[in-house]
Amino acid sequence: MVLLHVKRGDESQFLLQAPGSTELEELTVQVARIYNARLKVQRLCSEMEELAEHGVFLPPNMQGLTDDQIEELKLRDEWGEKCIPSGGSLFKKDDIGRRNGQETSGSQRLCYHGDGEGCLGPAPRGSDDCLSHGLAALRSNPDGI
Image 1 (cartoon, one colour):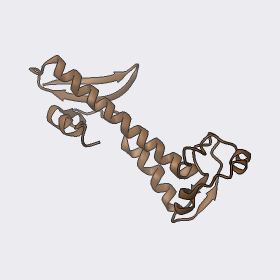
Image 2 (tube, helix red, strand yellow):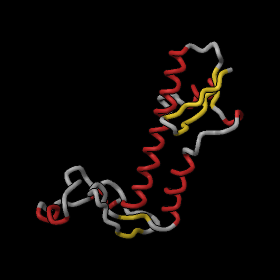
Image 3 (cartoon, one colour):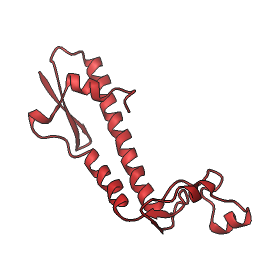
Image 4 (tube, one colour):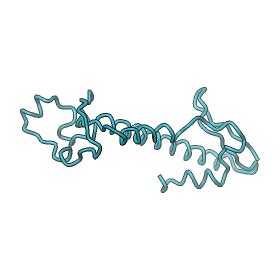
């Protein structure tokens, strides 16, 4: 068995345990799939935090416009009126102008923030915590994420 420590720069990403007889091309594909799956999870976690802080996306025709422009063009965010957070909301303007500003309040906000940090912890340190070749294949299934 071979233990691969995958890094990006000096930052540790994950450990992968594979049989020594595994072809290099197969390992490269496996590492790329796992790394790309981790990037997808990081993006999902980031969007969950943005959702909690600034609410749902504005319609594409309203994104990036100022409040004056929206008023002048008589645009309405119909979806934002339907998607009010169940725990209540506070207004927190999105500086980028992509979201409606309905910040989630209460315990639902903690749910969004807590999940993102637990998804991708630091790379495991012990040999028992590394990904095995079979487990990595199962976890990196491109149809699963």
